[in-house]
Image (cartoon, one colour):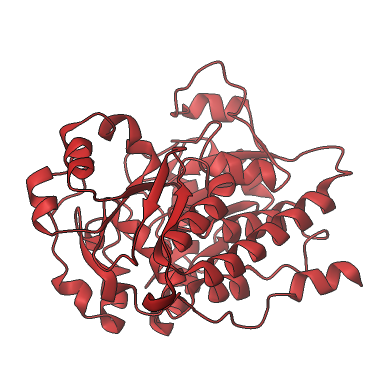
Length: 379
């Protein structure tokens, strides 16, 4: 009974809240880079170096566009099917200044300062590139605070920390505390239920097949590998004596995994898997079956023959939603232990005031497994 109560503890919608400007006091926080940053007043002109950090603002603020000054490049450059759905609810996104049109880690210092930001939000992965650079020196000179957050390198470890840092910087402390409490409670529950696990099912982690290579890019000791490990799985590439993130087809056939889990995006290339906003479950199943047919030897893999080939939206661990990845992967790997987890419901809670069109379109094809042999698909 105690476990069941814990799972539904946060099922009711969380209220978005931010500290009113007149109650906002000077505050000092420590960001994900370990830097002490002082915020003197509520930021009203926020600049995002990584547009996907908008998902975190979306989870924390009722109208995140009211406090945005611009971003390095438009969200549509990386998430072209999601951006229009968000623009339906927040038309200001269409007019939001962008320093460039295509994805890049480079930031035009003069163009950035011309937008007069009062807070610059940066991905932790760019810390070495930025600290000590002319950009950092000019931000210091103009007393423009900058904070580093991370939802990508170590999604489970850093999601709560990043939401807390961002919530404190924005004066959305209460909402950030509610979300992080839910995230941390769910992670504790999963750890507790896996504590007596004696064997860990093997998993092939395939990152966005078709986007850059057919197969298989993977994550080793970061990113989705963190998700699989925390969900009670063993990434077959985890102990390779190399940091190379590409696995050959021959190696995969020599090390058959019990499960194959692909992350996928809406705009996959030829031979890829579509997933996310505007993608139907039938689309995903079609793509997974096609992937099996085109990769030599995959039809013989145990994961394929026993219908343990899955796909999940790549965006869950590109924003603050890594918990959703964790819950769904845990349900796939250990269905009896986690039958009562509801990642769809928790995703709705985390989205806050986000447009229903975005919510349901994203979920319609975000967590799928394929039947095999293919059914209802012309070959």
